[in-house]
Length: 401
Image 1 (cartoon, one colour):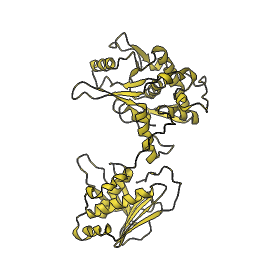
Image 2 (cartoon, rainbow, N blue to C red; image 1 turned 120 degrees about the vertical axis):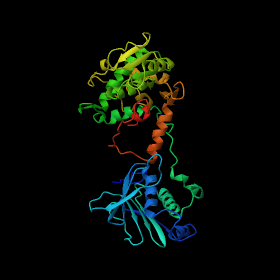
Image 3 (tube, rainbow, N blue to C red; image 1 turned 90 degrees about the vertical axis):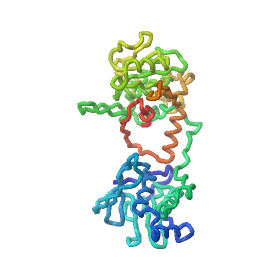
Image 4 (cartoon, rainbow, N blue to C red; image 1 turned 120 degrees about the horizontal axis):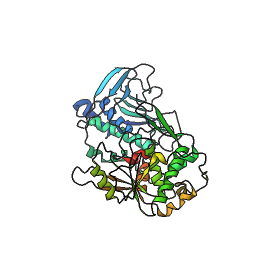
């Protein structure tokens, strides 16, 4: 199954396809190289590479060739960039949204198609849904298809670098605090599920936005009481769980930066002690009893003892509150705005080439990255994110939802 994502952030929904046609010209005569010299690649492989650009993936996908043939495109391995195509018959109930038509096929794309290229003897046409693909992008996809057929080098088509849309930076009028967006969702959709955790016994635990809001506020208030103002880095030693996300949001709401620690299954105690010392931590967040190896001068916050607060007594959030103040949820935390660390997180390298080095990620860098991605590829409101990577590998990805 291939679903064409919406790459157009502002176009209205439309079921009508638009068409761009390239007739035989100085550019199009390069197709002779394919038809006569066979210096390029076959049309189905060229179309597969075009779809990879659209889908931005190295995994497998499929498209429709003509009316009755399904082309399955295998995933790309790290050491291989050539496409592996497999043909099979397709039923009338298929959900493929990409189609390649050749000269002998009908000229009209199938119903439900969002992107179609029709290769004929005198022209090449691209049919596209303007709700999914901007016109300028469709033109570049057509040029890319022709260049792949002709065997021209990428240097001859350097202008195709605009296939990568120029990202939009986060406006100065919007808060750059990453967790501000979470608090807005907690206000707009308090009863929606924010986090769902599948336990080892296959039972599921969930937190709604209002529950995550209230519980993270409890921990954030405790952190502000335990720590002085200024730049503080708060390490946490928490396995994937609901408490992990409570810790993320709580540390940021308190105005500090978080630092995920590797689990004791993957790192020795000495490594954890070294990382905690490197960030000059005054408190470490975890679950359960305080570990005996932790320096007595450093506080230990047991999440299981501070996350059971009820949402019934959670102070209401004023809908007209400033976005920056909203990032702290209630007035008792607003003072953190003046002392909020510009750093979102400190992420340590693996240390495979020496001593692990802490890399700081700022709120603005993470927020701008997410904002830029969303400006070119909007995400549906009902999308769900699967947290696969360990927090130490990519903690910011965990917060993108």
